[in-house]
Length: 126
Image (cartoon, rainbow, N blue to C red):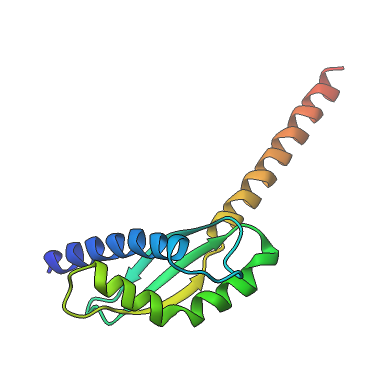
């Protein structure tokens, strides 16, 4: 059974690289702008579906870019099918990934707490 998971993991990683390249190089949609990254691809065990997680840093670009990606899913699927040699190319579902934004927010909160603690210890020493 572990062979199946290794295979889907390899396919998912290869799809992540190819989809990133396709979006950056082949899609000519003006809505696809700003800083983004394909953070991961989850492929179902039967290889029918691939959920593509996209992180978009600028909030104003999120809605239009996600709409453009969902509209281009068929084009991206065909392009992936030409680049990756597998019997069946999974249907591609784009999802917004907010994990990076959440991590940045948590880091800033931690920095804020540390700064307050340092200020408090300086005030106590004075």
